[in-house]
Amino acid sequence: GAGVSQSPSNKVTEKGKDVELRCDPISGHTALYWYRQSLGQGLEFLIYFQGNSAPDKSGLPSDRFSAERTGGSVSTLTIQRTQQEDSAVYLCASSLVWSVETQYFGPGTRLLVL
Amino acid sequence: GQQVMQIPQYQHVQEGEDFTTYCNSSTTLSNIQWYKQRPGGHPVFLIQLVKSGEVKKQKRLTFQFGEAKKNSSLHITATQTTDVGTYFCAGIGQGGSEKLVFGKGTKLTVNP
Image (cartoon, chains in turn brown, orange):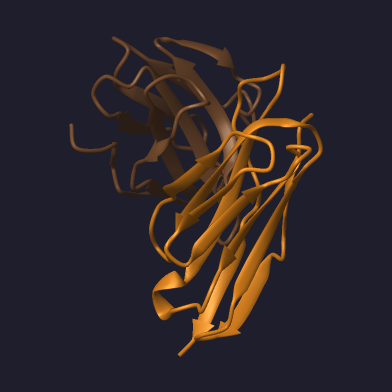
C-alpha cells in the first residue's frame, strides 16, 4: 500500500471494555512497531514484530495489553479491561527490516476511555 | 537500559531566529534518526546519521552526530512558521538491543 494505515482513527470506549486496534504496514515491510503517545508526550515503545514473532515485549505496560501479527502483515493491538490511563494515541510504524531502517508511521488511533 | 534525552523540552522563537535541539544518549549509538511531528500529525522521518562526526544538511536544517556517537543535534537556520512541530531523536544502542529508543522530543513554536 501507499503507507501505513491504522483503524479505527478514533475510538471512545467505556472503562472495563476491551478494544482492538489494527495496523496495516507498508507492503513488503517485515518489521512492525507499536508506540503509545499520551497528550503532549513523547513516544513510548510498546512492542515490535519481526515477521510474525515479537522478540521484545518489554514495553507492554501490563498483561492487559497484547499484540499479534499474522501472515507477516496486519497486526492487532488488544487492550483488555481498558482503564482511563490507557487513553492515548496508539501509533503503528513499519520498516523494511528491523530497527536500523527508517520507520514509517501510520496516522494513529486516538483512544479515549471514559 | 538505554536512555535518550532531549533538550530543551520546549522552545519558542520569533520567525527568522535560529533553533537548536540536542539529543544525548546514555550509551554509544550505532545510529541516530530524527523525526518531525506536526501538531495533530504523526512522526515523519527526516534523516539518519551513522558515522562518527557526521554532518548532514537539508536546506535550512543541519544535523550532527557527535564524535563519540552519544549525542546529536538538529539546528534550524532562520526558522519559518512551517517549522512548527515536535522534533524527536531516536537511537539504537551498539551491540545490544535493536530497539529504537526515542527521546521525549522538543516542541518548537514560531511566532510570525
